[in-house]
Image 1 (cartoon, rainbow, N blue to C red):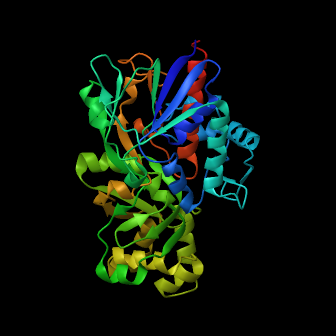
Image 2 (cartoon, rainbow, N blue to C red):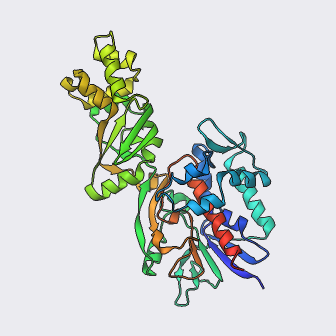
Length: 396
């Protein structure tokens, strides 16, 4: 007789877990509180559908915080494995110039989701909608909003973090775990904009302007990429990748300082030499024509430095390589691409099974880990799902 598996939540981790579970051994049901599956999966596709990243898996492993938490899952189900599996269900992919993995041009997110869902239907996976999990009873059976009690052999929680509430990923389950004696952490926004108190004149002229080919650093981490100047502060892949460092400083000190490198391809000596060797006399001309800084970059220097600092070649060179900005807060959590917090990692074993609840697993964004944008988030969710399925398939 088959054993039963209840998957709570219908997001990316849940779908891939169901796809790789052995349906000959298990009777598998996905319980989703909304009226359809994969709602956050579809929202993620609105801004450019990065299914994964194309870099070597050894390098990809180091992108996550904490660094090696996902190592075994990523090795078991790599970005190459994802591409091969998607091809088996009719979704071809390509790796673009940014090394991000996308569905072939013309394939929309809804088509990818539809193909995955059809694969699950063909495997005999059951779907139940409008079922919101409300906790456990005294026998550790699952209680849903309909007051129905579900007794299952294995439970896999895949309920997401706390951003994109419209999709159902609202973190409302956190207290249920906390009340069960499972160690949890408050949700914090990650991969989000951060607030900087810009001078009024500066933001009037520069709101919406990009800062390209720059690097940003916080604590001991430096990230190359791009930024966008917003009325709120800064956003973009360079600052998203520093979310763990920025959030740790905000938690400890209420503010944090990041340093902007406007010419990461040059050393400080290169900058000094170029400025000193320039035949141009005006500082602005030197920055624009000799160092090739953009107008927003020059405006940043002007807004941040005093007149004396701006005209002092030594100080100017130093600030071009490390221009400090004070971050005072993160964007609201529902505006974040992802969140940190949730179930503490010390509550699960190497297979994501809870120590305190036998045969109960937590996967996806509901665990306390972080990843940069660019396909890393989805790949981690896919890898966790496939790895959890492997561990369960091997139990029987």
